[in-house]
Amino acid sequence: MKLYLSDGTEWGGISFGADTPAVGEVVFTTGMTGYLETLTDPSYYGQIVCFTSPLIGNYGVFRPEAFAAEIDARYESSRIWVKGVLLCEESKIASHYLSNSTFTEWLKSQGIPALSGVDTRALTQHLREQGTIRGAISNTPMDYADPLNERYVPKVSPSKISVIEPTNPTGKTVAFVDCGAKGGIFRNFLNRGVRVIRLPFDINPYDTEHDFDGVFFSNGPGDPETVTETINSMKACIEEDKPVFGICLGCQIMALGAGGKTQKMKYGHRGANQPVAVLDGSAPCMVTTQNHGFEVDANTLPDDFEVWMENLNDRTVEGIKHTTKPFSSVQFHPEACAGPEDAQWLFDRFIDQL
Image (cartoon, rainbow, N blue to C red; front, side):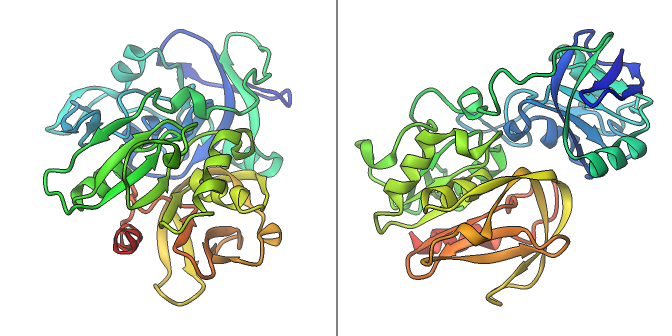
């Protein structure tokens, strides 16, 4: 099997995952650790992920451990969401006391194709020069078209409302619009004693019979402009006065709900080493975990919203907030999982507003 890109280039490798073809958007991520969290992050749905770190899989695959209803203590969801995996080298040995499987066994068990021996440095340079490209892991070139046109959120969002209770309740409740949320976000709310009403992407919290103190919009995959149902919910939420907070896709949804626009990035931000500055001086510069291929267009924000944070590498928008109301969102992942925990204070800030 090879990696075939839609620009006509081919990249050799050795198949070590499931013996099945896959088509998706080819992206790279720079994390040296965190492959378990990356592959179980629903935000990666529809993508073939190239790991730039030269060796992946050395600490194996951990057995699941329940944290709360439907939430695992370590994984970001209950399955692998990526379409395929590209590596320089996979570790054939799992060296960790918690491991119960090798990386290869895990990929095969979930039907995920993978290639090792790929020149990941050259591939990453190619993606940086050409921009994100669709491709296929297969024996022959395939149809690279995306039948969903990057409307992926319905594939990863829950189908019904559920309630998750913390073990140390504080009396606060958040309406959690789940567009493909990472388990780490739930764990951060639950660890802080916040009751979570988990909602599908297409349900406006104000249309339910549930009482809540604030609204949260999660991360998720694909083009934010395709998720019109969630954008309409955001519009309704920012017409009210209850606090609203968003992460990643939730940041883009807030901008769209406010009347702004988003745009596709050349190759996106993925990894655990992105520097972010807080422009109002309320916090120091942070190193953050990120996974997104779209950005907020700062020039389209209405007058009552402002850019709150920006990326120190390319000056893209990393956070926005309302000038008077408790509405804010960030483009990165303050829960990390995996990565630095510099931005954990954002959960406390939002909960203090509830």
